Amino acid sequence: MEVSRYNEDIIDEMRRNPITWMNLIIIGINILLFVLVEATGSSLDSTHMIRWGAAYSPLIERGQVYRLFTCMFLHFGFEHLLSNMILLFFMGYYLEQYVGKIWYLIIYLGGGLLGSVSSWVWDMMEKSEVVSAGASGALFAVLGALVIIVWRYRGQKGNLSFRRLLLMIAFSVYVGFRSTGVDNLAHVGGLLGGALLALILTQFKKLGSAE
Image 1 (cartoon, rainbow, N blue to C red):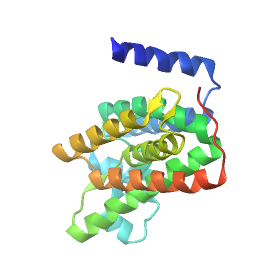
Image 2: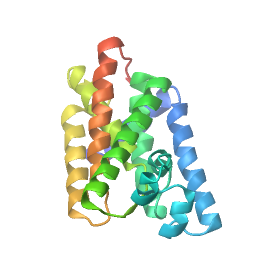
Image 3: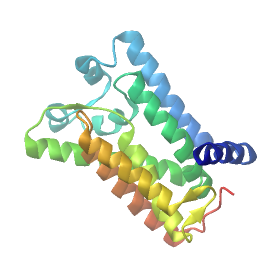
Image 4: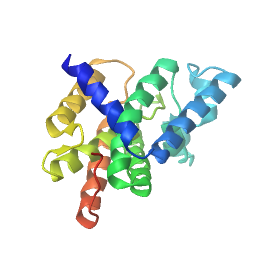
């Protein structure tokens, strides 16, 4: 009952506040690229994903550093895409409400890139040649930024509480480390990157509220 009421509160809050266009555009780009990948092959085919820009250490080391960026918009299968986009729809909504379109984009891309770099550095250290893709690093950057913002503004903004966010992140990290095929370094790097960018932001900008 409590979870249901909480979800209803979120939906009601989203109806009363301005549309977060940047978040919706990013979600749209992820979905569009997934459709294009599937239309030309399969998102579960690693070779095909590499053609579309997935991260692959040997190619990045040869100078194809753009893969650290493009991999953030690709997903392995519909379930991977769906889980990331649902969480981004809600968490991205809050972050864009608080920081605005430009800073939302900076946190999303900047934190996501740090996640990609962290994953790549780890792969080089382990001499691993794993194909990586997904918005998880950027998504964790959004979560990391929200933790700092909610903490900075006395632990509560809208329907988000500091404790609730920490539990969500702890559970996500735990599941990631317990699962196979999950890029945990991208998660941790994105989380730290988003938190750092939010710390910088809160020093110079008075944030709005999603209430």
